[in-house]
Image (cartoon, rainbow, N blue to C red; front, side, top):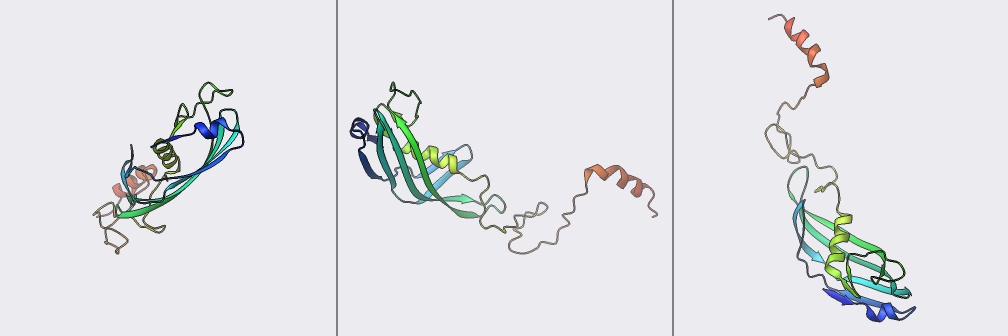
Length: 170
């Protein structure tokens, strides 16, 4: 959705508040496709701070459906977006490029996508104490122990282990 900013950008000191519903139904990136299960409208406040320049403040609350990185269960991923940017028309006094601005129109979907990408967590967990899955049998360790031997010897000590194994009495 494109929002026209010509009024705000042309009147010094003008403040305009908008509530824009997000049209995107999922967040797609190289990490995968994550459906949006809940989304509040994006609240945007524009304040003119000079000729052809405005300060943009925004916030929204979203919930994505994702998989836990440890146990692979479906888990909701809540995210609160809160951002503050300075935008200016191309060719103005400051030629800083704001990718979401096309002339005097703001692409709200691109802005939301960029903010989601910047706030995306490094690791998604269903809960903080998630134990993950057994690397041997694949059982979900949150449901209980599987009894597999998960001991992994230190590879730096493999040569010493071979000496002990060679001298072991049968």
